[in-house]
Each structure stands twice: as structure tokens, then as C-alpha cells.
Image (tube, rainbow, N blue to C red; front, side):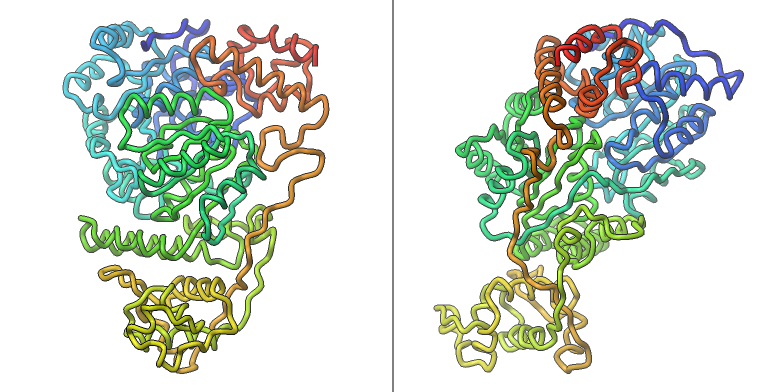
Amino acid sequence: MAVSAPPMSSSSPPLTQPNAAHQRAQDLLREIFGYGHFRGQQQAIIEHVIDGGDGLVLMPTGGGKSLCYQIPALVRPGLGIVVSPLIALMKDQVDALRQAGVRAAYLNSSLNPGESRRLEEEMRDGALDLVYVAPERLVMPYFLDMLGQLKIALFAIDEAHCVSQWGHNFRPEYRGLSILHERFPDVPRVALTATADGPTRKDIVDRLQLGQARVFVSGFDRPNIGYRVVEKKDARNQLLNFLKTEHPDDAGIVYCLSRRKVDEIADFLSQHGRLALPYHAGLDAETRQRHQDRFLKDEGVVVVATVAFGMGIDKPNVRFVAHLDVPRSLEAYYQETGRAGRDGLPATAWMAYGLADVISCKQMVQGSELDDRQKRVELQKLDALLGYCETSTCRRQVLLNYFNDSLPGPCGNCDVCANPVKSWDGTVAAQKALSAVYRTGQRFGVQHLVDLLTGKETDKIIERGHNALKTFGVGRDIGRNAWAAIFRQLVAGGYLAVDVEGHGGLLFGPKATAVVKGEETVEFREHKEEKTPRRPSGGARRGTAALELEGSDATLFEALRHWRLELSREQGVPPYVILHDATLVALSVERPSNIEELAAIPGVGRSKLDRYGQAILEIVGRG
């Protein structure tokens, strides 16, 4: 049931003195949220909105987008309205705000009619500072009429990429939010998203009528995430090895494209000792909710899911995101991997990838109901993803370049940086591969072409007489896995294309003829077998919250985590709503001995200090 938290002891001042209002924002950051200073562009965004300006905010997941509307809503007179797409996301954020002492509530379909009426009465009575509402509810005429009778501080449109026709989590109701500009022209609006390429950004501005809004782009880099891509061979055992060696006790998400595969992988991991739960649209609502609750409220749970899971997940200590199938674009990949390490501590984005995945995705796009223009856009996005997978340079640089962002040098936190890839002159091999494609009629897939080149007399080869072709067996000096890598790189480089309208065979691409004629050379990245990263010394595991803690500090961290888990179960909220892992790490290292020292720990605001301060000091004192 959504009820308001106790009111804060101080009220929001009128905006007669802009500088005083800006100072109030600084004070609230410390008093309510427990942080001593703003990060990046947070201060500029907050002051712009406090002063009544509209904004479009692009900020990476974990960058602190929520503060960019929560603090202005508390400073400006009136009620802050936050448009949020998912019930779970609303509940998480409202729970966290109440823990901090903010008068917040949510209004969505999870409430019965009586609860909804009571909450609307609180809105009219001025008993709330922030209300989260679903877009379907917001655009209802009766609700807009009610808002018209209230003093509104601002409108915040979270997950704003849902507005866009290109948005990968498209919600039709979001497109109706342009009515806010029409009905409330003097109320500032701020649209926020972690993911928007050029077309999506333009669509958000157009559909929300934000043409006069100031655009804040904070950069897309998530330096705490380590990016890894491995060649898919035995995907589920590759995944199991990754979890055993790097994340044996950590919470994380595994993405698969099909519901059947989700069920199979969840069952496989469960049989091997992991608490793994499936999540997809084929499960009933009660089961999905139960699995999501366990993921949020327990430690070390792995959710295996389709893309139906994750957009509304605010869990900051997800230590890994794994893809067993390639997503449909780098935009989708960035958003999904961004669900890892929201607390700023080390996390891993791991993907097992094969050309068959890309072919399957391209066929799905071609067979969809999208118009021809959208199909071309989606296919181009897939090609960009393929280029990311096959790059021989820093993956983070490739990813950031896609969003027109940049990194001056290699990141040092991806597999390519950790194990630099050598390149080799593959012109002759490319000519052999292209010849095999041409002589077989540009109809066949990679496996058949590799069989041909390596001289394997399969039934299919013999039946079609391909063992009599000049290219039969000319590639015996190169292993099958290496040939598969060559074909992937030829597709990524535009030398070969996928016949998405047929059965996924390979066709000549625009750059093929020049290579066949010897007019262009080709460089390939050297094929490598996957290597498991070395585990750090001292027993610590890469990607865990306590990565840099040793001895008594690590012991204290675990004691605090156990206390937090017990407290969260008593209150029925996720552990991170009480304190983030990053705060527990700081407590374990700094070891505050009194209330004043505890108040200086990031993430410990006034309300939490009052509620939990003494208990924390006792645990630290024992540690």
C-alpha cells in the first residue's frame, strides 16, 4: 500500500532568491541523500530545473539521474510528478526515498481503488513531495484535470527513450506525454535516459516538444564495467565456468533471446548449485513478481531472462550481466550491460557470440512488421554490434564512438586491452573464403563453407558435388574455428553479407570484388581460444563488492551485509534500499567511531543516521 512517509522537518522555501534555492539543493544533497558534493553535470542540471528550465538528460546508468529531478522537486514549491514505466522501478525508488525521509508515493495498477483515492487526497492536501505515476494513468483526462488544480513543481519523464519509435522498450502511452507541454506550459519538464543514439534523441525532443530544452550529455562511459566477448562454442558451460571462476556468490543477470532457452539455462545453472530463476513473458504474473522480488531482496540470485526483465531494476549491486545471445543493437547492449555495477564498484559485461546469432537477429528484423526504413536502421545497428564483437581495438572506445562519445586512450578494462589482439595479412585466406562463397552459388552458411575449405566430405558436400570444386580442401592449413572467425570478420568488414530473406546464406558484400581481384588487402584479428582471467591474489574475486577489502575489513563488510539483510527482511525492502554496498565498503575502511564521523560517510543522510546510526556504530565497534 502506498502511503506517505513522515514529513521532513523543513519545508521548501519560495523561489524568490535563486541563489538561496541553489544552496538549498546543496543542503538537501547532504542532509537527505548523504553525499557531500554533486557529480559531473548534476549541479548544472539541478539548478537549471530549479530555475524553471526544461531539460533532456543523457546520463549513464549509475550516474545519478534520479537526483536531477528529486532534488529540484524538493526545492521548488509544489508536487513533483515522475513518469515511470514499471511498477518495480517506482516501488524501489519510493522505498529508497522514504528511507531517506522524503514524502514520496507511487500511483499505479498495484493499488486498489481505495488506496488510489487516499493517495490522490494526500496529493490535494499537499502531504507529498514526489509522486511516481505510470504513463497510462498520467494521460487520463480525470488525472490531468486533478493535476490542473494543484501546484506542480515539475514533471520528470524517466526512461525517456520509451517515447521514441526507435526505442527498444517502446511504450505507446509515452507518445501521449506531449500533452504535458500543452496543458502545463509553465511547469518545467525534464526527460531522462541512459541510452539514446542520434535518431532516438531527436525523436524524444520532437515527441515531447522539448525543442527549447537544454540538452545535458554526461558521457556514456561506465569505467567500472569490464567488457568481454568470447566466441560461442558450448555457451552454457562457458557461462558456468565464467560464474564459477569470477562470480561464485554474486547477483547477476543472464540474457537469452528465447523463452525456451531462458528456462533451459535457469534449470542448468540450478542443477550446478546456483540460485537461478527464469523470467520471461510466458510465465504468469505472480511467478514473475516472485522471482523479481527474490532477485531484489536476496543476495547472490541469478535471473535468467529475456529483455522483458531489467528496465525497472534499480538494484545497484548487480555484479555481472551475461549475454548468451547477441542483443539487437549496441544501444540495447549498452543499456542491458548498464544494469551491472550501478554502485560504481567493479562489474563484468560478458557475452558469448557467434555469427549464427547475428544471422538469426537479421532474419527476425527482415521478417518483422517494421517498414523498410526502420528495417534498414535496425540492420545497420546489428552491423555495428558485429563490428564491436570483432574489433581488434579497445571495446570501450568502439562502444563510446557509437554514441559519439570518445575515450582518449585504451581503457585497460576490456578483454582486448588485457590481451591485445595481433593481426595478420589474411588476403589469401579471404580470397579462398570468397571463392568458396562464389563457387557454391552464394547460398550456403558458414558451417558448409568451412566443411568445403577444410576438405570434409559430408553428405551435403558430396550430394551437391562440392567435393569436385577447386576450393575443396584448399584451407586445410587453417583450423575450423579459425575459419569461422574469418567468415565472421568478413561479414563485419562488409566483404560478405547475410541473405536475410533466404536461409541465412552468405552473399558477396560491396567490398568483395576488390579483394577477389587482388586490388585490396585484408587484415584479420588473430583467432584466440578463450582464457579465464587470473584470479587476484589474497582470495579476492574480480567483480565483487569487497574486491579491495582484506582481513578484518572484509570481515566487517560481511557483518554489515548480514545486518543489512536481516533488517531488509524485517522491513520488506531490498537490502540496497537501506544502504548500498559502496557505503558498506566505506564503513569497513573508514570505521567511524561516533555519529559525526558516521555522518561523513557517503550515502548516510540524516534519516538513516537517526534510524541506523547507533546499530552501525556498534557493529563497527565489534569489528
